[in-house]
Image 1 (spheres, one colour):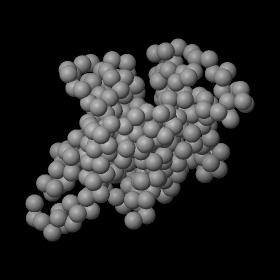
Image 2 (cartoon, one colour):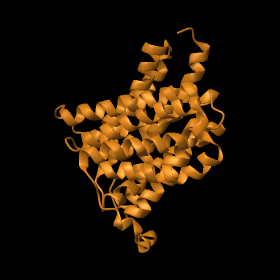
Image 3 (cartoon, one colour):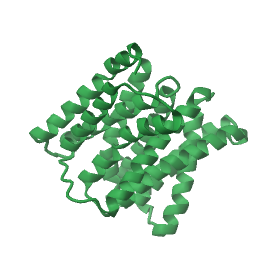
Image 4 (cartoon, one colour):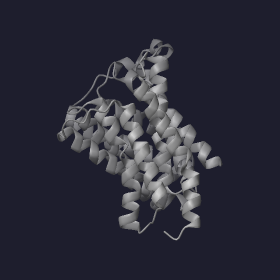
Length: 296
């Protein structure tokens, strides 16, 4: 039960993260927004990592480094895709990680799932489509990059499931993951986009209003350091296919916060999509019960 609460808090934090990300776009593009987010997180993580002497733990370094590349791939491919596809299509295709996670688990890890679970996956994805006002006219190059984002996201969830049960400290693992993610992003984004002006981050007045600075502080402290730590703690006990479904609640939370803080409207179809996602996720325990009672 506690792990479920942790995941719900995670999706709530990530849901507001869409608002915080929009704040960062006032001064930075998507590439630098992601890079600075994790650079901030890595910087704030350093005192804890030095205190724990984390840089002398070879196995932990290796695991967190591999995890950082899965996460980097998810965010990087999503950003590239957004330049050539619509926000609605990007939001929908990204959530395909909920489908890829059990598919990869089935093909590569020989996992088996009850038909009721697959039904809930499909209904939840239908809900996301309605929420995103999906108009899927054609599949373009941006959609392809976003599809890679969904695959990398599924890979990250599965990798965390593999390593989480044996981790001594989920906080230490995630803080190292955030630090590596920041360094990876800095090198790649600097090569692709060149330098950026960060002087706006030193204006203390920006702390008291929605700005790139407040957005980055939220994304680094809460979305990166807190939320990913809660994910890793939860995945010590909770299987990846359940986690990926619960993560879909990020979309309704994002829609709610967009309505509250950005004045975005929600149509009847959008609300129906939210309801489908909530019902599908809420029925997961029943699907798991049927799985445990069935030989399928």
